[in-house]
Each structure stands twice: as structure tokens, then as C-alpha cells.
Length: 520
Ligand code: NAP
Image (tube, rainbow, N blue to C red; front, side, top):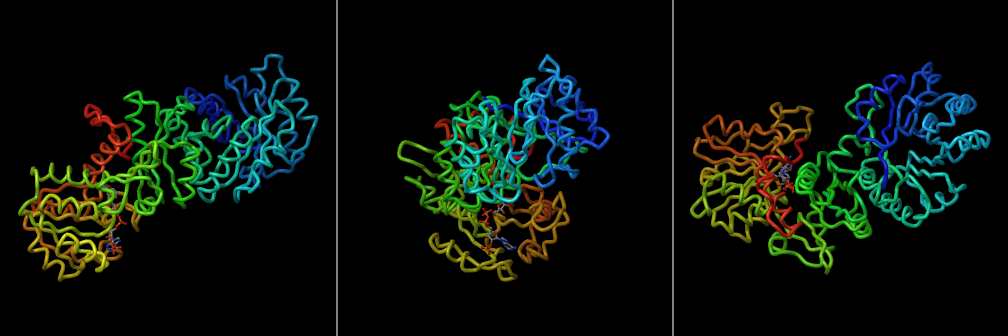
């Protein structure tokens, strides 16, 4: 079973011990990053394993390998020797592992380590890219049977992660640690067991005085509690969220909490992906059981499906994949998520005789348009790119227009329900504001619609954006007396529908108050 290794990167030994104490229950091994210690503190490392009370890796990482050690090699070797000196016959008082780079050749040091039961981790680092011949590198480094080979490379694409996974499989007989640095590699840390890695490195993100997290690193508590790393075995079903960029994935919070509460042997990981082709290859080889598909792959994933549901066929986009005996089956839970939310919000069972404005013609607007048509609404579609509004409107015989003042005029005839389906007002679009109130609607989003439409107070207004809870548009509507709702309700409803697709049964409603989507 893969182990969790907590990286200790504070400036003093005392602080590293404090951090270890706080997170002890989440880790199996600690890595003392001597290179991060203040120079004077480096003389205090010998007693660290005894003080730590758990197996410790002694690592002095050079700056060229991504560490903080900038001194000469002689001094670095002396420091390692200091860590191993006066070895105790009680092995628990010695370092359990010594990380030695593959190009460091000091036989006396290694011999001293082995004599007192310290295992050598022979490490290879590439801070720029993923080397092509990883199996060759792994084989060339496995010198002695009791050594662990470590390969830490930078994944610049999902195909780099695929190569790492294949190298792990090809070298299944070698005890090894595999690390893919960078955003694409984060899920390798979660799925270390399936990658055949001896351990997974994790950090204590909440400790401000440690080395800041780099892309792809993971918090030790999150790894243990949210992803339930210790429960992941060959039998565990893998699910995940595929998209790019996945800045703040919501699925892991929602699904992993459900898996824990329902005692389902499954894990849900974020899969940031630059190439859907490479990811689908990796998903096949990893045996991924199901996926939530987000922007920009909802349409490009279609060629990989053996079969698609009527909703996915109707709008030509798919947000949920499940593997069955034929291959991938794709469906779209956005449609029902949207209509369930809208009907609940308006207190209706259909939208006959209701006049609706839909602002936007993107992926979610397509799902909304299809459902508005099914429910019998009369709809006006307004969009920045005019031809997209027209293309979406024509098959349903809806009205369409642009986002300027003419659009505002047309809205006067479609104002029972107004639906905002663009990213306008979303946190982090082009400002650093955290509540969305200072969002400059008139710079990046020159949308007269959002600023000029005069609410009468009778409109029901839905905004697909849910962060912030109240977009400037919703605030204006609410101030005029309109009933408003943001996109969170629809999001959670589509996730419940995804659960039903993944597991072939209804979402257990008793869980609802206990799960959140990306808000933990
Ligand atoms: P999408 O496919 O990228 O569509 C984006 C839409 O917004 C298009 O109509 C686009 O117009 C318009 N747009 C983008 N930038 C604009 C600008 N600067 N000015 C005017 N219009 C602009 O996105 P989607 O998947 O449909 O999602 C739409 C929004 O829903 C997301 O941005 C997000 O805020 C929110 N969302 C909600 C949920 C939920 O479940 N509630 C889930 C995911 C996302 P053009 O056609 O002219 O490009």
C-alpha cells in the first residue's frame, strides 16, 4: 500500500517537529528537507528521527533539482554524513531513508547508511520536462535490490503523465517513487497506489512558514481526509473531473464526501487535461470508471463515445461519461439540472405561456434552450456573437438578437424569466476581487443588457454564475424586487444526476445538507 510522506520544509528543527506533531495522523513517513533549514539548524539533524517518532527521509535537495541547497557538494555530503553519524543499533533512532541523487557517487556514505538499516532512495529530477525514456532511467538506477528508485519529472502535458504511468507499469518489479510535478500531475499523488508508487509526497499547506506549495502539490490533510488516500486499492473505482483549466474543481468535494458517507469504495480526482485524446488513453489504461466533463471538452469528447443518451445527442455535448461493457456511454446532466432548478425556483411544472430571455449561447445555454423548448416557453436568445444566437434559436423557432440596446428593447417582450448564462460577474474573470461586487461590467463585458435593462420587479431572474452568490446583475434585480437565484442550485442538481448515472440509483437525498460543491 502506498505511503504518505509529509514534507517538512520549515526553517528550524523545532518548527518541523511542531508541524509533524500537528499532522502526524495523516502521514506514514516524514521527509526532513535539510536544505530548507537555516544553516545553523542543519547541525541539529542527527536526533531528528528519534524526536520525530516515525520513519524519516533525510533529503538535502540541491537548487538545480528544485531544492534550496546552494552550498558546495563537499559540504552537502558532510551534512548527510552528519545525519547518519553515531548510528544507533535501535534503527528507529536512525534516518529510515537517505535520498541520494543518481549522479552522486559516494560509496562510503551509502555503505554507512546500509549498515544501520537506512534505505537509499536513488533519485532522478527533471525540473523542466518529462524525460522520454523513463523506463530506461528507472532500470539504469536500480542498482541494488534494497534501493528505492525515485523519478521526479515535470509534466508539461497529460501525455507526460501517461508516459510516467506506462513507465511505472513497465517497471512493475522495481520499488519506486513516481512524481509528476506541475498541475497535470496532481492526481498522480492521489492515485499513487495505482501508479505503483511507493509513496506520495504531501505538504502542510496551512503552515505559513513552510515552502509555498508549487503547482501539482497536495495538502496532506486533503489527501487523507478528502481523497481517503489510505483506502485506495486496486479495487477502488476511479472517477474524476476532466477539463482545462480546472481552477477550483467542485466535483472532488461533492463526490468524495458522498463516497465517504455512503461507504463507497471510490475516489474522485481532478483531471486537468490539455489533450482529450491523451487523457482518454490514460483513462482507459488507468481503468477510470466515470467522469464529469467540463469546458472545453464537452463536445470534443463525443468521438470517444460508444453510445450517447438522447440529451447528449440533442445538444451535441456531454458532461457525464460512464464506462460500460461497450465502452464509454455519454450523457448530459446539465439539461435536467437546469430545468429542475428553474421549475423549483418558479414553482411550476412547465413554462407554457412564459416568455423567457436567455443571455448567452455557450454550452450551458444550449442545454437551457433545449429544456426551455421542451417545457413550452417562448424564448429570446441574446448573445455577443450574433450568429451563435441565431444558430441556437432557429431550430426551436426562438427569437434572437445581440447584446446592445436593441436586445434590451426586445427583452421587454420576454421578461417573465431572465436567465444570465455567460461568465459575466464571476469571481476571478479579470479582476482579483473576491466578492464580485467591483467587477467592471463595462470593461471586459460591454453588455448593455446587464446594465441597461430596467427590472420591473416582477421578473424571475436566474444567473448561472454562483461565485459570488450575488452577481452585480442579480443584485440589481433583487434591489428592484425580483425573485432571484444563482447557479449553485442547478450545479448541485446536475451533480446529483451524475451520481445517478455513475451508480444507477437515485442520489441519497439525506446527504444533501452534508455535501457541498467546491465550497469546502
Ligand atoms: P461557454 O460555453 O464558454 O459560453 C460562454 C458564453 O458567454 C457564450 O455565450 C459567450 O458568448 C459568452 N461570453 C463570454 N465572454 C463574454 C464577454 N466578454 N461578453 C459577452 N459575452 C461573453 O460557457 P458555459 O459552459 O455555457 O458556461 C456559462 C457560464 O455558466 C460560465 O461562465 C460559468 O460562470 C457558469 N457555470 C455555471 C454552472 C452551473 O452549474 N451553475 C456550471 C458551470 C459554469 P460568445 O458566443 O460571443 O463567445
